[in-house]
Amino acid sequence: MIPEPKDKLDTTAITVVSGPEDETLVWRQVDWRRAEREVRRLRQRIFTASKAGDLVRVRRLQKLMLRSRSNTLVSVRRVTERNAGRLTAGVDGEVVLTDEAKEQLVSRVHDPADVFNAMPVRRVFIPKPGGKQRPLGIPVILDRVHQARVVNALEPEWEARFEPKSYGFRPGRGCHDAIEAIFQVAKGKNPQRMWVLDADLAGAFDRIGHDHILNQIGSFPGREMIRAWLKAGVVENGRLSRTEEGTPQGGLCAAAHNPPYEQRWVMRSAGSWGPVGAGWQSERCA
Image 1 (cartoon, rainbow, N blue to C red):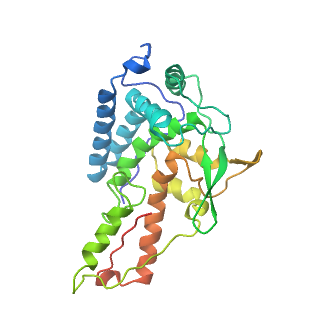
Image 2 (image 1 turned 45 degrees about the horizontal axis):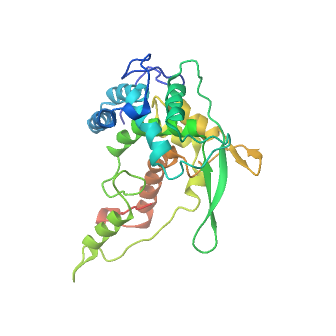
Image 3 (image 1 turned 180 degrees about the vertical axis):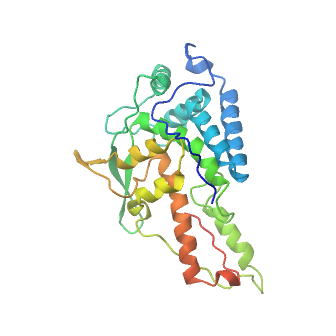
């Protein structure tokens, strides 16, 4: 086990780097190739440091990512232009559609006087197969931007730790990759594997322990932001409910902090269900 750095790196108030604070932002003049290149390069540095086990360097790079102006620009663009739910408002009823509103959103994220305060999510329901409904939590637009920024800092650290045969909620991976991996070991007259276990974690998002998540992420610089989102509550039919466990599906950060918890649970369960030493292999696609 790699010891956590001794210094406290919580990030509840974020200052600006990667760009002059007094520079006037014109949305249509942003050099998006440069911004995305800077974010991608910093993600790669976090991944490399995590792979090497240099946790102190990981934390320093994550702080840099959370302060990065390029990260904020890319995150605002992702939430307001590329995300499928960009037209869906949270509890504040706010959506950001115009260039001027996007410029103001960038300024709000970087305003030192604007103290971070997580807002409750708005609960909506979408249909599932079999007539059931899946609850989704819609964060306010400001929280979505902060979550996108946190994902860029947290995701590459855990990408370096995940099992190679894990496919759920990971960038560039999906169910089709898991299906292909299963096919490769099960094909032919003498397959490497003779059977497949299809399992699901009932209410995985609904019952995730907050303390376990926070313990897993350790001294991550955005730890207190994640804690605030976990405890922010849910508004349904105008009534606010506290969230003592679980995490709402629908937020950008939900998928990022679920795999560290779920993967350990699955692998621990696999040890009691199947002959791990005899060639057990798991393919996770969700």
